[in-house]
Length: 408
Image 1 (cartoon, rainbow, N blue to C red):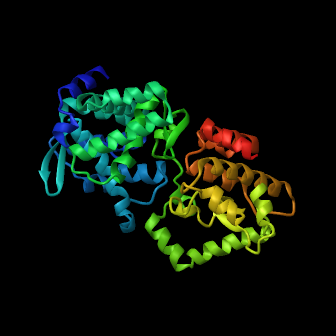
Image 2 (image 1 turned 180 degrees about the horizontal axis):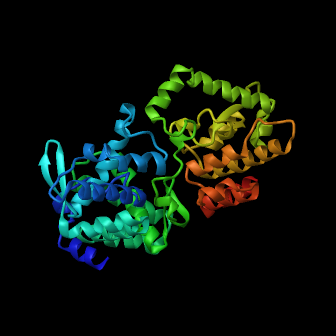
């Protein structure tokens, strides 16, 4: 990567000067970068060094289709309802390659690009394997942070590795992007921040950010990949665009009424008895109010888990409002307690030969989808109850764990 670093040092990557709010983005992951570089290299070989390409050109290639359908298990790029899903998958890597000076823009409507011949080797290396893409992204992010005056702030986090340091870094990064680019809302830089942080954390073998919190372990390759189970896809068939899946769900009545029916099924299965036994469940036992269905991973964040039985746990009204939510939208400590108790209930169900209400495999898929599991897909498929419990505890901070131990 010495030649790449030498090239990047000759580029202006200082965000304070470029005002480039798209220097990095949500879809920038090693596996996506490797795939898009491969598509660009093939285009270059098929059409010659002088030929330009646009995002639409790449999306229409057989190479891109093969990657998305065969490798990533995504919808056919030619499907009209999938178009919006692929705008960012192609466009964001192109933005990074352009910012890094590996391709040049030659037209504006539509935006056309050409590969800089002397730098084709960089694209070839990234196209060859995912680890080459990891190395490039790390060098690119590191040099951009260095030129932009951000390096010391990231270094402080990698030295301290605690929740306070993470919060300070995230807050500073959001304000920095808002100050020096055209992005004014908090949401966009907050979404991109984990990508910027985790590519560095992975290369440094440090903790990063998972599910909005400090990761319990150093960031793994799985954490920075695109091709991981997405919670939005957990209830739809592979190969069907999300928008179409939502339309199918709506047309077949999968709405809030359906979620209510699923919650009722869970209540009937547990005979309206709360799944967590504590002082609040005893107090509420004399109340005329029935138990409530609590979504362990909230509907507002994980809409595709709203009607999954394994994501619903029965609580008394006091447990639900005062404990599960409290002063936070979701209390991480109580969320951990809910997961542990839900796992116990699922295990009891599967050990009962007369019951098929819960599925441990579905529960594992949920853990995988929300980022709690940090294992390969093969290992996830062979996971046992004790393994799942260990991974759940690992994913939460020691501070939360101490609270849960007291509740248990």
